[in-house]
Length: 416
Image 1 (cartoon, rainbow, N blue to C red):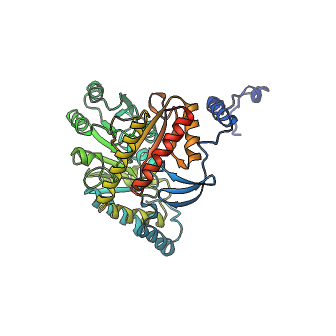
Image 2 (cartoon, one colour):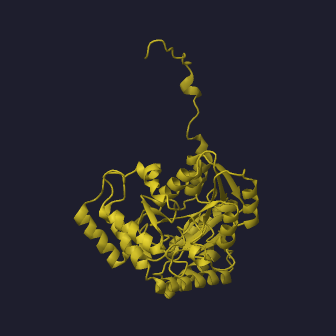
Image 3 (cartoon, rainbow, N blue to C red):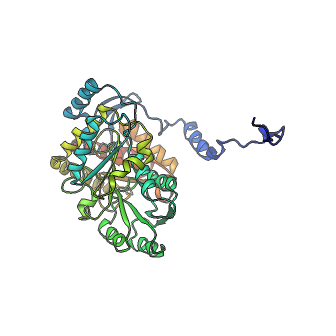
């Protein structure tokens, strides 16, 4: 102990009076224990013992159709993608053991960023180790103390965490409400830095943002715009560039953030931009600077997948067919869905409550179908959802099989 610095006396009862730091999770612990006490399988601890293809796996000992993996374009078993990863593993080893700004940039990382620039036809691309880190890093770096972030209330956790890390003033608005967004922008002090953060497809309900109107409003008020296209890259838009492309605003958006863990079929994140000062982000973005870079085998698979997605029009068309058929079939069976019409590869089935949602999830798993059970607080309006993520590799016959499984499980549980 340093001389001259007196430590306060510690009360003898300190240990007994300390609050259990886990007590904040007591309600969630009770909910989980209640589900398991009923003899139900844990919907949040599913184990895949063997993955057979992009659409099938052995889950908890059962041959199971996968309808909850976000593997939208089915690239995880593409022969060229797998071969590229194996070759890079042989040539460069298992990892980089370093940050991108030190020893962690291999030729594969540069090739991956080249592929992204070509895919989006943009000047700059920056690859992160995860999609979460891409949002965390870009948002926290470009909008800091004294700046304002206007964002949709249903934004992903990585977006909210990026706002908190950067310490900007956060101004949320009602989901997909253009008028509410403009009201928030009007109230921001003149001269303040402004960033509007939107998502192309919102992952819970699978609904699409009205980007044409929103980007126009943001630009009218002098705000920069970031769009997270995690759930639309590869699938939506003429070239698979996402809702920005479909809405005709890709040249008006300042930053597009995405992930490799959905349509690209591996892991990692990225940001592309045409901003002339963007390259400075490599030196000032903490989640980029202070973490190890992706392994060479991972960036090799991502690069190969991205380049193949540029010629993915046939797969996109089939995925749309699957989405329309599943959405229409579930609606005709009497299920309540998250959107009136299919808007993406996500079809959300709304459950009456968590207990029946969990029962329906288990009934589907016993039928041989895996979907996501999504619950509050991750879901909007405290809904419980069964979230279905279609894949371009699902055959038309598999979609019909899935509809039969939903019908039998729904009737058994009393949902329909």
